[in-house]
Length: 215
Image (tube, rainbow, N blue to C red; front, side):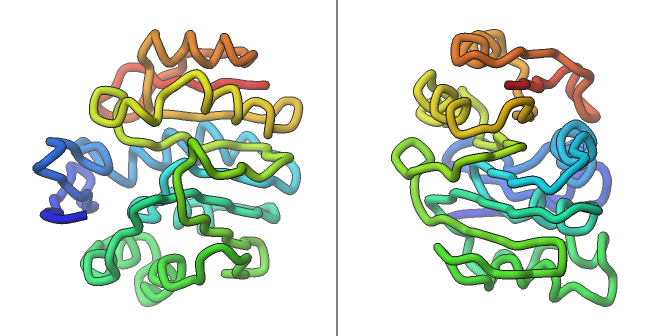
């Protein structure tokens, strides 16, 4: 992906801006705050037992990094990404310095891990990076938690469709959770059509609401 620009967000952490899409990877109101609120607080911290996580869109790796740092349970972390970011961009991001000062290589290890094979990053965290399109790749089964973090529906509509929510629903365990920053009514209705029970809950800084769906 060309012409990526690093931008500083309100909490001091970086995001990436894509001029061609007029889109940021994370909220300008705070990248780390948004990721923690949407995926850790509303997702990971609701899990009590070993969990298999699927992230739709690996991106900067921030969601995976926060999960690695905050999990107290064994996690199998699957993520599907069609356009991995170049390492020179990753090395410029400040997530490691902010969240794990002195051990910034831990963040980099998520990006240097091999694709399409399990890699043990820590005693509690195993990473499975899948290169491809979530719409066409086979999803891992028995998923307990989904981080749905594609670009906004208005920017990447092909990622927000009934078929993908149906497929996610079928791949998840009973009482599994799907969390996303998005709160659009059309997305909520697709989740409900797939079979989820969907709730609107308070969103991260700068966003009134987000969606959390339960199978």
